[in-house]
Image (cartoon, rainbow, N blue to C red):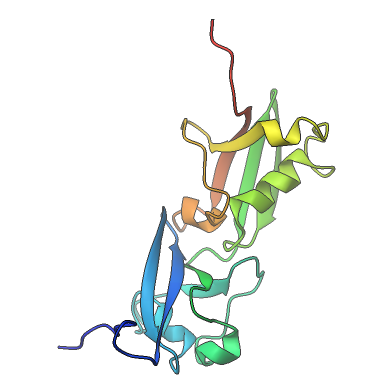
Length: 171
């Protein structure tokens, strides 16, 4: 039986934040500093997994056989793990929808900047801080650092958002 590396007792262990397809919850994974990107996968058996690893805000997945150091993965670094290689984000606002594809490692904050900005709904600058994205059909605002790929489950690699005011008037 193998045990997980312990960052408190082993100086060769780092902790990496892993965003995983299908859940907006983060996992803090201890890995050996001299390990490989493959060590961040759910399983290291390529016959079972078609997962890839991305650094936050990177468009291309990392090579699985390179070292963590060569990949730029450091202590408390954020990575995304999943099967979707691209995520189609559709944002709805005032009866109109725009969509665009993003890397699964794209934070929701970046999707929001696109949707609210010049290539999206062109919100006036004073309105931008007053709005946010919700996953369509939900009522809870997302943390800005959630990876858009965490809101999908392969083979369906898309997510629908509503662009809404943060404060709504109720009467």
